[in-house]
Amino acid sequence: MSLDIQKLSSFAKEQGFIFPNSEIYDGVGGIYDYGPLGVELKRRIADLWWRAMVQMHENIVGLDAAILMHPRVWEASGHVEAFHDPLVDNKVSKKRYRVDTLIEEYAQRLEERARRETEKKARKAHLSPEALEEALHKHRDFQKAQQLKARLNEAMAKKDWAALTTLLHEEKIPCPESGSTEWTAVRQFNLMFSTQLGALSEEAQQIYLRPETAQGIFVDFPLVLKTARLKIPFGIAQIGKAFRNEIVARQFIFRMREFEQMEMQFFVRPGTEAEWYEIWKQKRLRWHRHLGLSSEYLRFKDHEHLAHYARAATDIEFAFPFGFREIEGIHSRTDYDLSRHAEYSGKKLEYYDETIGASYTPYVIETSVGLDRLVLAHLSQGYVEEMAPTAEGGQELRTVLKLHPLLAPIQVAVFPLVRKEEFIQKARTLYEELRLYFPTAYEEKDSIGRRYRRYDAKGTPFAITIDGQTLEDETVTVRFRDTLQQIRLPIGQVRSYLSEQIDIAAWLRTL
Ligand code: ATP
Image (cartoon, rainbow, N blue to C red; front, side):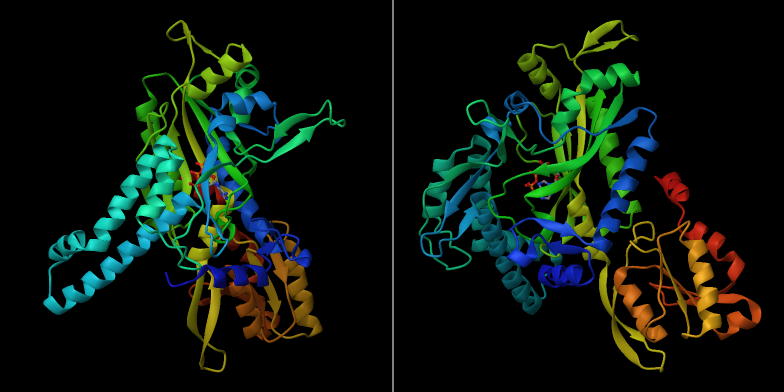
């Protein structure tokens, strides 16, 4: 993918998908607003997640827990003690970095350089693909990258910040900005935003904005269980805001300080977790694919280091313009969270299993996906620049957003070919009918070619034009965004035709 993220963010701003937050005050780093088209796209993704998870599973229910929670929650969850990232400042550029990403990206650059050089040699020497891989593994830069990553992983797993400082100095990791290798010592930084609860400072209690939505689910577990009469295995799903004071918020909406998560905790009988972990991995991958993310842009990446309580963990990664990165985490978390909350609250958080006549703390499989990262994935895969024929028979560059029709912010656009009363009247009547069923737009300004292009860039899959022939035989033109093909349909059949094309039930059936 040659698209760069700068270009995509300009496009997203121009089209009204995503704006920098508080832009008139020069913005706030890592915080973004969703514009008129962005809010539609984000809501459609969230809606299709909710339908796939809650509506389509008899044993999964929803929840909307508050962002602010009792401060003990974050002690029990381990976030107060351990939700830290290591940060470092470069003495010359004064730039601040998250050490793990700094080293990972440096290693990646080394690997890429090694690959480029090896491929160049391989072309000259006509090496086979196997010989090329072998040569790559012997390349000095490639080997150095592997060593760096191994040392980084070890230090991160032990949260050994001193080892990271040593690594930066010994390996002379350069600042990407200044090239300088003069670093401060590595310090740890808690990612939770804190605030005060209560009006008077003497009485005020320090509380946190939740850094993940999952804890609301664990804490409400007994109430949900009681009210929803669930039988194991069962799940609780939630969509909501989460906040992390990321050291460096970068790559547009990939790493934000305020973002949205869609999480589902699936509670299972201990001993069955391996089976459910596999099932959820496959189900979640299928969901992404069926919404149009291409298989070659998706992959699983298993965690190299598991938390001490975890049985298994993998990320679903997507090929963003800046490389493969996590969009969703799937974790097999044992009974860790419920047991910790039971310990800290003194309340029983167990399930009575009638089939075996015993109580136990269920094990949990978690699926946790970032809604904003999904918006970014769909925008970056959907954005295409290509040559297309003009009405005059020439060719021109068009920008088109190839979103899945179910995700398109505007699914249908209705145009009168010319601005004449009889065309406008028919087009308005059709528009008013269609908007009862689909997000529909109406436009009469500019040439038809320009209107098509405008809606191509908004991702609108179907454009309906009322033209001269409509006045004669009551048929309209339906134009398809991706293929540019056009068909004629009787005006009275447009709604039912579109209902077949944009059919949530048909989509849910494929999952
Ligand atoms: P990363 O390693 O990229 O920081 P993470 O492993 O900390 O992510 P989780 O805690 O597993 O992420 O959160 C689950 C999901 O929430 C992620 O897969 C991602 O899609 C989303 N997410 C996490 N942090 C952010 C963020 N700062 N901005 C946007 N989305 C995020």
